[in-house]
Length: 236
View 1: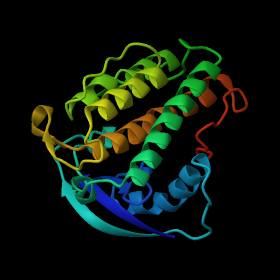
View 2: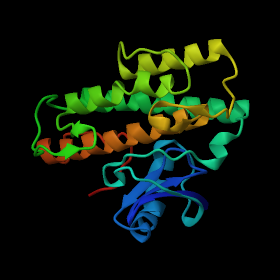
View 3: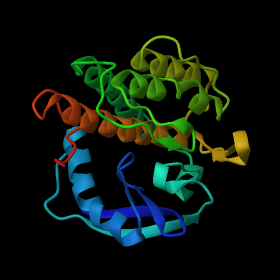
């Protein structure tokens, strides 16, 4: 399987996004480190998405984006070239289903955590403040991105309710507005470029970042068999 990658970097720090397996990504202190992680990430992601897992994964970089953002903490503003294009209804429905599955699975992971306020992680500051350390903090941070992401493409959505319900309401508002297959580029906050395809990709990406953090924190805090590996993350 050949994976087209978008490489976003700040100096050597690198984020690598799969352009044809939306939601899969790796990070590394160098491009080479991020590339080396991609085959395993693709296999784990496809297993989570209930798709056939290839025996061999090859990569190539099809787009590069330099940024001043803190890539090491997974800050990102890249807009894929393909996210400037309109979607087919088939692509939209596939990404919508994945975004809702991701929200559902994130909620299941959170509810399965033995202690919502317990953690062995030490405090650490990132570009957006103190990094979430407990399951409760990770869940609220991930859930409450809803209004921000939808708002960048002019969709008014709240953060009320659980992560699945508030994401579903965003889709309902988007579809009621119409033109939901559009690759139209919007100028969002801080001058960042957004499109509807980018919003769907960002939901999957952001969920995966914090689901991995929650799972790994849970294993460190409560033990290897105490937390279900719902997202099929690799062992660490």
